[in-house]
Length: 176
Image 1: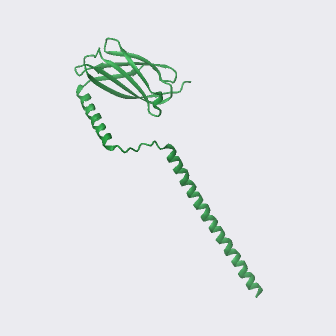
Image 2 (image 1 turned 180 degrees about the horizontal axis):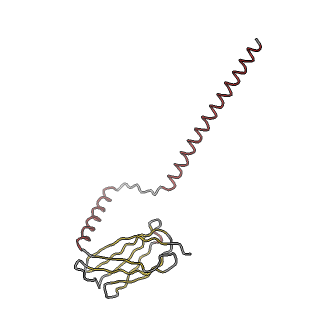
Image 3 (image 1 turned 120 degrees about the vertical axis):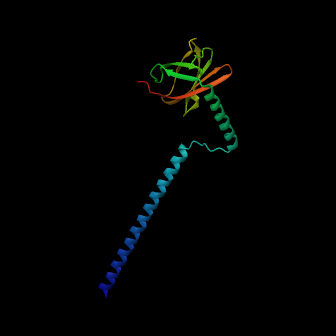
């Protein structure tokens, strides 16, 4: 009988050990899943831009106004070309030239040109440059951009109460 009780005791010990291993495996699995989920929640909240708005109607109206201004701008038929004549690197002065034509192909000589460099990540480093007219339909100015990365360039031309805005993108490299 002692061998039978030893066998039962050995079997009970094996069963308890297996049960403990399964419980340990379940705890490790649950801890891994919860840890991964907590990490993802933390990363999502840290990088969330906070762009939820509650004024949908006002934004809808602004979008409609913007859409109407784009249609008016398209009807003007103006051509505005913005060029950067130097390699865009941090710390180097960029030479900006804008050439403008009306819908008939005539140069717009007396306009007012404002170029707005927008850093999409940080608006504190945005730059605005008012370009000087050269008299031949081109406008010229200089700007130094303080940060590397992607910039959006908005070129706005005003002439005879009309306004035209062109947009393009610029990649600025880190200085060597």
